[in-house]
Length: 187
Image 1 (cartoon, rainbow, N blue to C red):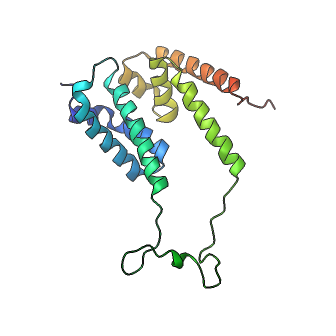
Image 2 (cartoon, rainbow, N blue to C red):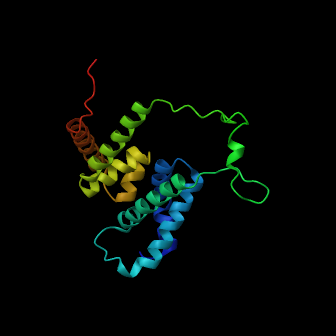
Image 3 (cartoon, rainbow, N blue to C red):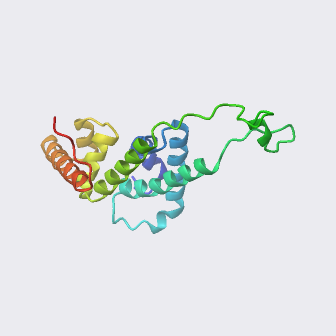
């Protein structure tokens, strides 16, 4: 079967790509769109695919760019109310006394949000430093939630090899996160 066939990509990697996108975008619809955009981009770029990486790794790299694009679109697209002509009705956001018509949503805890954002960046940076097979095992188990048997079948490795790779990945991730200032607290 041709490894550069969209149907094969969807069958073999679609669920994995969806789980990766869903984890980042927190929306099934946005994740589906990102996967679809990834497959279309891969189809148009398949002549440039050198085969240096596995198709899944190549598709995941494309997906990461599509996820960033989707997040940028979300930030740019603010859903303002419209008047009967379809123009933005900014005045509808305010009452006659100048106060908000709808209360502004609570911001939560900006400090905690910033720390969580830093943690996510550190996790991504650390995961990028894992060896490719170790990164795949770690991602499939921790991010995609796959069981050991599924991972072994997907990657063609033994359960023992899977557990060793997962153990080493976890140790590396812990050490890397600690070096980046995310040391756990001992109770």
